[in-house]
Length: 74
Image (cartoon, rainbow, N blue to C red; front, top):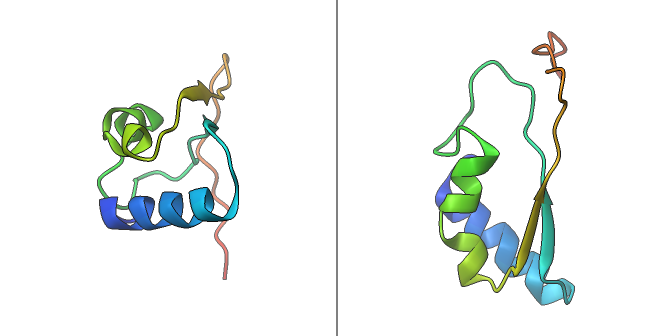
């Protein structure tokens, strides 16, 4: 997410379109994060999930780690 406002807007729209209270956070594989969230932990600690009544947060990961992708979308 490029900003806190972008995450808030996404959650507002998603909660408006679907009735859910559980979410899975998955980190990207870019070398440098764009925006204020450097990790899924930062998203979880932002307070925005609580503000949108997200009751359960799961986090996906790779126990052996994952290399940063060199793939670039054009």
